[in-house]
Image (cartoon, rainbow, N blue to C red; front, side, top):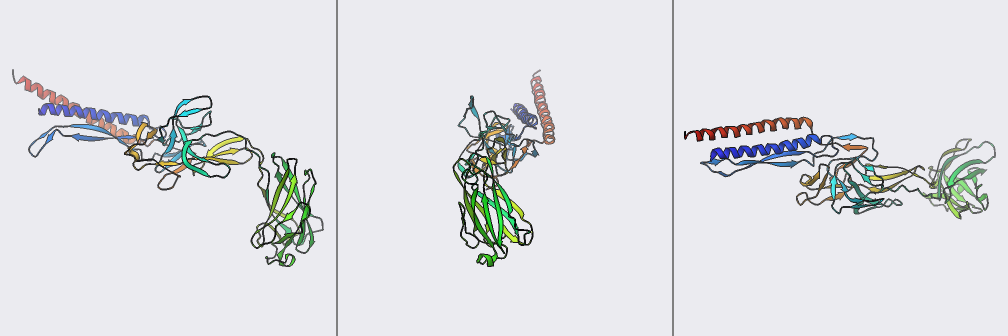
Length: 436
């Protein structure tokens, strides 16, 4: 029985090394596959009987040893939608059951992948090279609130960015304490109406006394009246009568026409408001001159010339779709040719208690098992989840040198097992020849 046992053991060794060859071959073939996770081989010994006095040959079995948690190298990519995960975690992806004209029906099964070479397909979905659709949380593009109740395939719609009329303007400038001449100094502000058309608002500043100015608001395109009114702006404690440092806004008042002024309160915005009509109805605009008592907005310091430091306003012209990109926080942002952008989704990172126990569906996608634990959906870089690197891809975690070394060992082990088979055959033949 020992000769037959030795032969059976050697044959099991041949089968085990064949499995190892297969795993090595799979690893080498996928050494350049994005997000591929290698399969090592573990060998398990099975005994028939063993005691202190005797031991019968058993057999060996090869078991796959998955390395899903081993990081592959991160390489830069020219693809603006490419993403790699540094650390633990996977992308949540879906697979399509049917793809129609502009519509996709997805499988209810949840899949997970490290292949981050996403591209936008003809239907606007983000799809990687394996055909998996990237999932994410929906984000309200108006207020940026993330809906974490579910993850769904991310779809980018190439819609026009609707124009937004200007409602707030911030002005930062220094009026000269000793101006040359008595002519007004002017500042022009571009604002947008409800249709996204650009208009000009002119602010004419006239010095009426020391530290005391009158600002006139003129709107040439206003269909009601080009002159919207005036307001008094006084600087420092003497002219304004309020306890503010020299050169800072101390009062805004004496408003005329459609101009209204905000009352003084320490460390609050110094504002004036006015109405305009560009043909789309009354449009209220608030002009922020800074903060009472602070030097961040309008000031009056030494000088003879008007010094404009900055103007900003919140109106937006219409914009056409320009592209889509991702951020390291996982946000998917749509950009427009008017310089604006909107966040439409956030990509979470999915972690597992035992990622090496995930069920392989192919080398780039996995499904959860009882052994892997339930998926935990988290923001990148939180609670142990890995970080997202943009414009980058995670390569296969296969090391060619290591695989070739294992190939040599497996080849020698296979040859040794064949030798055991031939040797056992020779011994059996010699046993049969004893009858002659």
